[in-house]
Length: 162
Image (tube, rainbow, N blue to C red; front, side, top):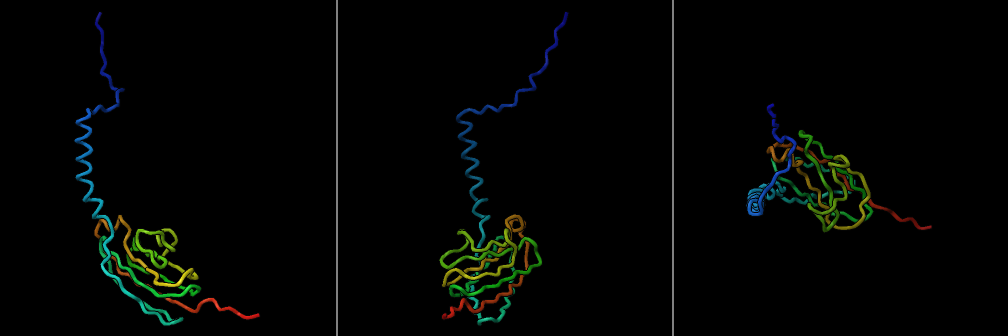
Protein backbone atom coordinates (compact mmCIF):
# COMPACT_ATOMS: atom_id res chain seq x y z
CA UNK A 1 0.00 0.00 0.00
CA UNK A 2 1.41 3.44 -0.89
CA UNK A 3 1.01 6.53 1.20
CA UNK A 4 0.40 9.96 -0.23
CA UNK A 5 1.92 13.00 1.31
CA UNK A 6 0.57 16.49 0.79
CA UNK A 7 2.58 19.67 1.11
CA UNK A 8 1.84 21.88 4.12
CA UNK A 9 -0.01 24.70 2.33
CA UNK A 10 -1.77 26.04 5.43
CA UNK A 11 1.35 27.54 6.98
CA UNK A 12 1.15 31.30 6.45
CA UNK A 13 3.53 32.70 9.03
CA UNK A 14 6.79 34.33 7.99
CA UNK A 15 9.82 33.69 10.10
CA UNK A 16 12.58 36.28 10.19
CA UNK A 17 15.67 36.03 12.31
CA UNK A 18 16.59 38.91 14.62
CA UNK A 19 19.50 40.07 12.40
CA UNK A 20 17.18 39.85 9.37
CA UNK A 21 14.53 41.93 11.14
CA UNK A 22 17.10 44.61 12.01
CA UNK A 23 18.32 44.77 8.41
CA UNK A 24 14.71 45.06 7.19
CA UNK A 25 13.98 47.84 9.71
CA UNK A 26 17.10 49.86 8.84
CA UNK A 27 16.50 49.46 5.10
CA UNK A 28 12.88 50.59 5.47
CA UNK A 29 13.86 53.64 7.49
CA UNK A 30 16.65 54.63 5.11
CA UNK A 31 14.52 54.44 1.99
CA UNK A 32 11.25 55.83 3.37
CA UNK A 33 12.65 59.00 5.00
CA UNK A 34 13.28 60.84 1.70
CA UNK A 35 9.77 59.99 0.50
CA UNK A 36 8.20 61.44 3.63
CA UNK A 37 10.22 64.65 3.45
CA UNK A 38 9.43 65.23 -0.23
CA UNK A 39 5.67 64.89 0.28
CA UNK A 40 5.51 67.94 2.57
CA UNK A 41 4.06 71.04 0.92
CA UNK A 42 6.60 73.65 -0.12
CA UNK A 43 5.47 77.21 0.48
CA UNK A 44 6.43 78.99 -2.70
CA UNK A 45 5.47 82.41 -1.45
CA UNK A 46 3.70 84.44 1.21
CA UNK A 47 1.69 87.40 0.07
CA UNK A 48 -0.20 90.02 2.05
CA UNK A 49 -3.63 90.86 0.61
CA UNK A 50 -4.77 94.43 1.34
CA UNK A 51 -8.55 94.56 1.66
CA UNK A 52 -10.87 97.57 1.56
CA UNK A 53 -13.89 97.28 3.88
CA UNK A 54 -16.75 95.60 2.04
CA UNK A 55 -14.97 95.42 -1.32
CA UNK A 56 -14.27 92.08 -3.00
CA UNK A 57 -10.66 91.41 -3.92
CA UNK A 58 -9.85 88.84 -6.59
CA UNK A 59 -6.55 86.96 -6.44
CA UNK A 60 -5.44 84.60 -9.23
CA UNK A 61 -2.66 82.08 -8.93
CA UNK A 62 -1.16 78.82 -10.07
CA UNK A 63 0.30 75.80 -8.24
CA UNK A 64 2.15 72.66 -9.29
CA UNK A 65 2.93 69.54 -7.28
CA UNK A 66 3.83 70.15 -3.62
CA UNK A 67 3.77 73.93 -3.90
CA UNK A 68 1.49 76.01 -1.72
CA UNK A 69 0.80 79.72 -1.29
CA UNK A 70 0.05 81.48 1.99
CA UNK A 71 -1.94 84.71 1.82
CA UNK A 72 -2.02 86.99 4.87
CA UNK A 73 -5.15 88.98 5.69
CA UNK A 74 -5.22 91.54 8.53
CA UNK A 75 -8.58 91.55 10.29
CA UNK A 76 -10.28 92.49 13.56
CA UNK A 77 -12.30 90.24 15.81
CA UNK A 78 -15.96 90.42 14.82
CA UNK A 79 -15.36 91.21 11.14
CA UNK A 80 -17.02 89.00 8.54
CA UNK A 81 -14.70 87.18 6.13
CA UNK A 82 -15.97 85.57 2.94
CA UNK A 83 -13.61 83.55 0.75
CA UNK A 84 -14.39 81.36 -2.25
CA UNK A 85 -11.78 79.28 -4.09
CA UNK A 86 -12.50 78.31 -7.70
CA UNK A 87 -10.00 76.09 -9.50
CA UNK A 88 -9.54 74.03 -12.63
CA UNK A 89 -8.32 71.09 -10.52
CA UNK A 90 -10.79 69.52 -8.08
CA UNK A 91 -7.89 68.56 -5.78
CA UNK A 92 -7.07 72.25 -5.13
CA UNK A 93 -8.13 73.35 -1.62
CA UNK A 94 -7.75 76.15 0.89
CA UNK A 95 -7.30 76.24 4.64
CA UNK A 96 -7.79 79.30 6.85
CA UNK A 97 -5.76 79.74 10.05
CA UNK A 98 -6.27 82.11 12.97
CA UNK A 99 -3.49 84.58 13.88
CA UNK A 100 -0.29 82.87 15.01
CA UNK A 101 -1.18 79.58 13.32
CA UNK A 102 -0.43 78.15 9.90
CA UNK A 103 0.01 74.93 7.93
CA UNK A 104 0.52 72.07 10.35
CA UNK A 105 -1.75 73.64 12.97
CA UNK A 106 -5.49 73.22 13.44
CA UNK A 107 -7.35 75.23 10.80
CA UNK A 108 -10.28 77.56 11.41
CA UNK A 109 -11.61 76.24 8.08
CA UNK A 110 -10.41 73.19 6.13
CA UNK A 111 -11.56 73.27 2.52
CA UNK A 112 -11.05 69.54 1.98
CA UNK A 113 -13.60 68.85 4.75
CA UNK A 114 -15.93 71.85 4.59
CA UNK A 115 -15.74 72.88 0.92
CA UNK A 116 -13.74 75.73 -0.58
CA UNK A 117 -16.15 78.41 0.62
CA UNK A 118 -15.85 80.19 3.96
CA UNK A 119 -18.28 82.78 5.30
CA UNK A 120 -17.90 83.56 8.96
CA UNK A 121 -17.27 86.02 11.76
CA UNK A 122 -13.64 86.12 12.83
CA UNK A 123 -12.93 85.20 16.46
CA UNK A 124 -9.81 87.32 17.04
CA UNK A 125 -7.76 90.22 15.70
CA UNK A 126 -4.52 89.76 13.76
CA UNK A 127 -3.14 88.25 10.56
CA UNK A 128 -5.16 85.32 9.23
CA UNK A 129 -3.37 82.90 6.89
CA UNK A 130 -5.15 81.48 3.85
CA UNK A 131 -3.18 78.50 2.55
CA UNK A 132 -3.88 77.28 -1.01
CA UNK A 133 -2.53 73.84 -1.95
CA UNK A 134 -3.06 70.62 -3.89
CA UNK A 135 -4.15 67.45 -2.10
CA UNK A 136 -1.33 64.95 -1.61
CA UNK A 137 -2.51 62.52 -4.33
CA UNK A 138 -2.46 65.32 -6.93
CA UNK A 139 0.78 66.79 -5.58
CA UNK A 140 2.58 63.46 -5.91
CA UNK A 141 1.51 63.30 -9.56
CA UNK A 142 2.91 66.84 -10.02
CA UNK A 143 -0.50 68.08 -11.18
CA UNK A 144 -1.11 71.76 -11.82
CA UNK A 145 -3.96 74.03 -10.73
CA UNK A 146 -5.01 77.50 -11.77
CA UNK A 147 -7.20 79.13 -9.15
CA UNK A 148 -9.11 82.27 -8.25
CA UNK A 149 -9.81 83.51 -4.73
CA UNK A 150 -12.72 85.91 -4.15
CA UNK A 151 -12.14 87.58 -0.77
CA UNK A 152 -14.42 90.03 1.06
CA UNK A 153 -13.79 91.44 4.53
CA UNK A 154 -16.52 93.61 5.98
CA UNK A 155 -17.57 95.60 9.03
CA UNK A 156 -17.65 93.91 12.30
CA UNK A 157 -20.03 93.64 15.15
CA UNK A 158 -21.50 96.98 16.09
CA UNK A 159 -22.58 97.52 19.64
CA UNK A 160 -25.73 99.47 20.17
CA UNK A 161 -26.38 101.45 23.31
CA UNK A 162 -29.69 100.78 25.08
